Image 1 (cartoon, rainbow, N blue to C red):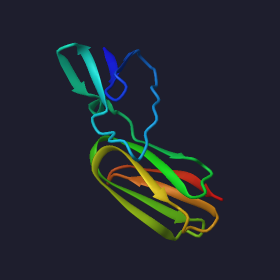
Image 2: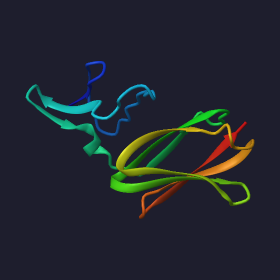
Image 3: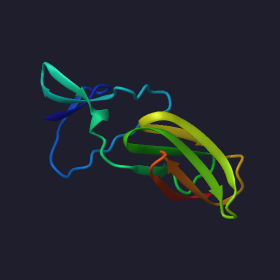
Image 4: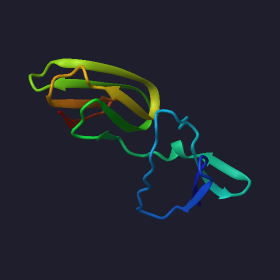
Length: 133
């Protein structure tokens, strides 16, 4: 089995216990970017292979924008909240009924300091600390 990047046409052999990294931009249409290729005739969307509940923030610390990459074990109504150090919710993003996603968030309006970003899919929650400079 191979991971096919439909944007670059690159094929990468899929190996057990291996992570695959890639970069996305807000100008790209990243839906259906990857496929699992078993042979030249059969492809399955790679999105169906997501099996973890995960949240990643970059850059961290951030100044103007932060990119939030997330994944749910399965498709779910997903919310992302920003809570300041005093425990007040200062920003909420409705990401939709999705399994994976990337959100670029403008944080210029937030004061410098420590925030907690929480991914919530109705069943699970994961929180990461974000520093805004």
